[in-house]
Amino acid sequence: MKETVYIETSIFGYLTARSTENLILAANIKVTQDWWEKCRGDFDLYISFVVLDEAALGDPEIAAKRL
Image 1 (cartoon, rainbow, N blue to C red):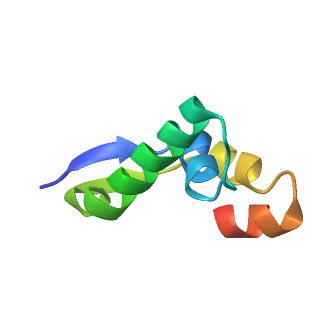
Image 2 (cartoon, rainbow, N blue to C red):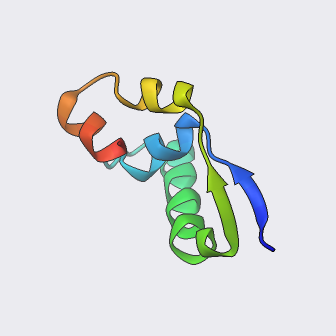
């Protein structure tokens, strides 16, 4: 049985973020994208309806990618 991980809204934000020159934000984006690509299959991932509601907010194009 895999361990479970709750995914909160910022993860989807980092996965769909536009490029930035802010080094801290860029590092957060890169680490999140690397984990998502390499490690997510090792876990059972869960989100809440609150995460879905939050991910749907903002720019419609980016929100569609988050969803």
